[in-house]
Image 1 (cartoon, helix red, strand yellow):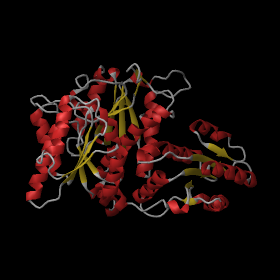
Image 2: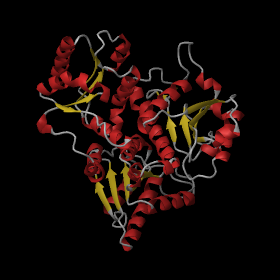
Image 3: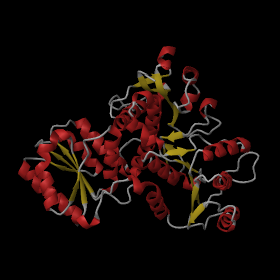
Image 4: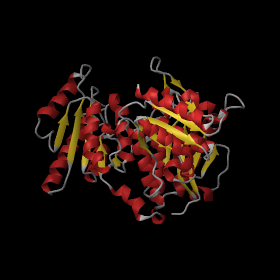
Length: 480
């Protein structure tokens, strides 16, 4: 399907007001970051159009757009024009099965406050909650540690999910190699209690990064019969289900006597038995938190049933260990067999030397110094299709000990994108902190890179001899 516009972002005017003339509005900043993310996963700059509530966008424009991102806030839901834009997009895109509407939560809204059209969609929360007061705060510093954990992780989720839709819509134009990565195993990742929602999202992200299709793709219904039908249908399309069980029992749907967590486990056990009778593969991984001191009596009874009831255990491997250990087991079973081994401990610590092909000659002296100091040098791939190159880059980010971004002929925009990737590295399944990050610039006075100092990046510049000495000092700090 050939569409000229990749993404329309619909928003209320006041959600893009800036504190001063110098600052970008919230939505403009959001568009800028989404462009960067999508450029990285698509390999080309996306065409993103802003649609404020008083902008007139014709019906033909809606017909010509692949995705609508609705930025939800109090202002959005009170604006008839914003709601009309959503309706117009749905009307223009009734001919496809792809998920083409995404809701970004700029502020917290209850399900009943949201437009009926959008209630069942999974939301991408782009706001910050004060852990002490529970009040919502907007991000001022998009590169803070708090933003790294929340805003950027959701931005990564959104970009990959939009990417999946764009790939689906462009299916006829892509080559077979690109499409094959999306034909891998479909996994049911069960909804959890509120105490494990963040961990579930991290696992979901990691599975998606490796090309797995993760269900459910929509928010589970609050009414039991509709929920049961949806879960059963999703499980039929899967060969594996993953269940995370913590202290929270979970919400109880209308018309049910058990929690959503409990219901999904029972339906998965039934699915395992049904597929077993047909000689079809279906396995389950159940993780139970080792720390259950705050669990209610009902939750403890549910966990006891999982451990002792033969029916509840059907087709399941049950683990009660630290969550990181469970993730490692999951990676070994699902992911490690598909990955190239990137890091050999016997070869010492690894440095990911991030550079562009155009700087291949200029980077050579620095590569040699890194090797002579006892480090294993990992470098980007430049051959293969875009998704393979991107996967190699993510694998490197997952396994590196230190990272150095090299700038000679490349522009500042290229550097900024690589810095953002380092910022997002925890979301790619890293198991350890990055020991050191640096930018080497052949420009003797890289004042244009000073902004990166606030992100714990060492700036190395000057003539080559001076830069190489500074590099040795940086490497010494990583060793120690």
